[in-house]
Image (cartoon, rainbow, N blue to C red; front, side, top):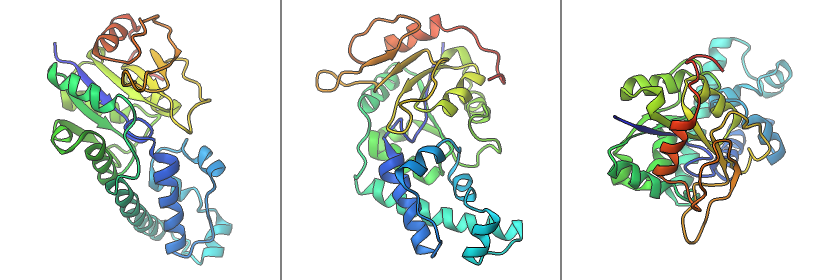
Length: 266
């Protein structure tokens, strides 16, 4: 049997939203002279929008377009937003490569465990591929990052909570949904993975603490790294044992106990 472990990026590999993406968005607004700045409270709502270009496009109300002196033509606006997003991605990846955002507990450990056991590894994210690869290399190292397949950005037209990116990953990895595990941190990511029929572990992040994770197989504060950073179980519907960190044995147990979910249904 071939198994796969598929990670979301932001909030899972590293807690990147508040200290990485948000300041990069605001630096972009400042650079282009745009009349907007997002607060932490603003961004708590915006993280529910899948994709950076989509978040940027959310500011394009008729009044904002007029105040910013932007063209009304939709094609021109798409080109402008793409330019904003490219600048934002560059600012964000600069932060990552400078080592400003540490990896979350347990990520590097479980990647090594999964690789040693012959599991296939992947990241499935709505973020730009350049951003995802920068985070991945920073968190697990260049050698381990080469073990991963990366599905990111505009790889699929319908972003999370649509299941498309996870369905693509399963097909490309040639792994059945029952033999895959996803690690997510958000409700929209959970919905995408569940709709693809994949058992999902949620590691809550700074912006997702109070979201609804009813359909997760396990919810923890992190995957954990013993002895320094044990994981804390928040929801445990399968009643798996709590060894203080999430390992492959835990994931296999969850896969065996999780109900089969028809693909394409949330």
